[in-house]
Length: 544
Image 1 (cartoon, rainbow, N blue to C red):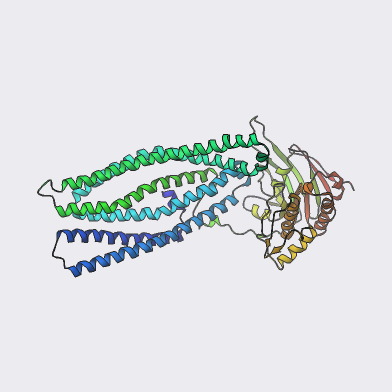
Image 2 (image 1 turned 90 degrees about the vertical axis):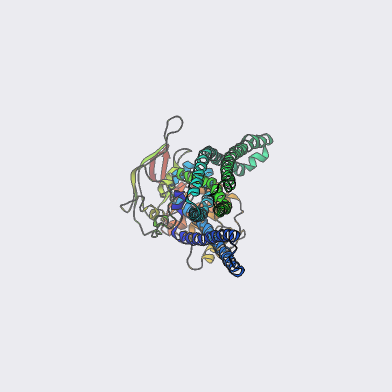
């Protein structure tokens, strides 16, 4: 639970403390009611008016403080969950791209959906558990005042129950861990289901095999592990309930057994124990939630994304300064190496030595597997060199200034993502500038833009690629990178891209790097750069 407590921001803790204090007042009022009822049962000298006034005051205090506690707890839980979602999203975006690619989209999705939900649920149970524990402490003080010796016996029984519960829930935790691991596999299958929908619909045998061998098998395994974990928790709960009711029966049997037994004391104990049942069960039921929260924390840690307090300055880095006018970009032996494959071979890009200057139009060519996509990620700062260096105007690019370096690039990747609004863009007449680009991209009849929001993104793949250019043009960065952009365009617009759009960018002083197999347009560039299995084998001026 201590790890969960460390995730809760200070502003949420202030609300939680208020809820705990309100809960303490409610618990104190409940203990007062127990004492009042116990006194009324054994002492007839209390006046009716005094009894009713005390009873009404305690009931009003209990109901009012309990309502305040519930409101504050609801505010705490919603705020904590929102903070966790924002913080984890921010830290995922700050994590190295290569590491996230290695982890895989299914595990990241499982963390963002399943783990965050469990973490939020566990976090919101922290103040509730603290409140219930405080109520138990208050009742314990009252029971100690009634009889310290009986309290000692009761504490011994509770201790035995806690040890037994811990032993029984250890096995349950293992099954919960297996269930969580299975969720990663299930998310992978769900991704295959959505991305391979057309292929599955076209082939009945493949579709049925996918459902039976992937979805049904994994969901059954998830169900089995989850239910087994629940059964072990149920056994632990039964163990505690037997001890609790055994203690209650012992109190009842003990009352008439000796002349020195104070009936009022035993009655007070019985009433207090009955009242304490609710907070005790609440704490017991919270332990599986805390266990799943612990598993969620472990899964997040496996992503390599550390979760600190959401209000930590490290979680909200300052916005990098914008790109500046530049004169020279150098690769000095820059190298990027992938981990070895199953055959022990590791793909290495580089070492690369080349220089880029403003206003150049460069065509980057190479066969499949030559390293073009890796080069683009290294070039744009999405990957960090494993050896060598990248320098912009002599300034070494490191982790500390990498965000600033990336601000110099606009890119349309082969696996681009198209947002439905112009996020992060501003300036005067944004909609007007965007509409003018839509005309140039021949998309003005397909969609509208109002308030920076696109009316639709449901276009053909080639049109969606053109729409991706809209954001790149509006960003107005010094360096543009297009990864096989024209591959999905018709002959008409491919000609426009190479002869007009690229020429316009170069005329505006932009540096443009184009990955392309359209060799009949290479003469339009200033340079032709060729990669062959990670090595720069050609770097020459394009033939005019």
